[in-house]
Image 1 (spheres, helix red, strand yellow):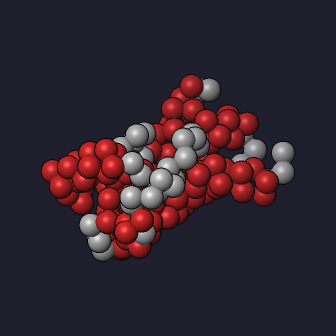
Image 2 (image 1 turned 90 degrees about the vertical axis):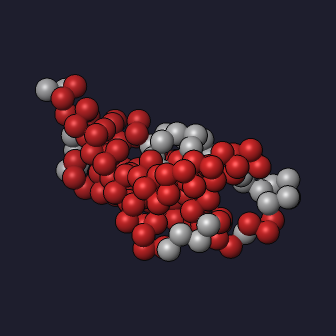
Length: 146
């Protein structure tokens, strides 16, 4: 397996999984971890950076493109936006630690942009949650094969 190709594949799988497109990067990470050719810490780092960057894209969309929300092509439906806004307002910035959770995570990062959460606070919380999730995948794979 070509290491560069594997890392690029993981990076883009993680990035796409963090946008509003429904994909899973955990399976890619788990397969690469199980294969054992690449240092696990490097795999976790690449997945976390890619997934965090995908959330930054969502934040930027919320921050700069909200005025297009009535358009049919707009990536977040009104119901998703309302639900994520209520969740965010209830739990505040700490809810960004859950940006990795399927279904609610992507709209949360979008709402953070809409609500103009400071970028560095957003980045710290999202990266922490996403890295913890990938560390949990690493732990699960390492204990499943042990």
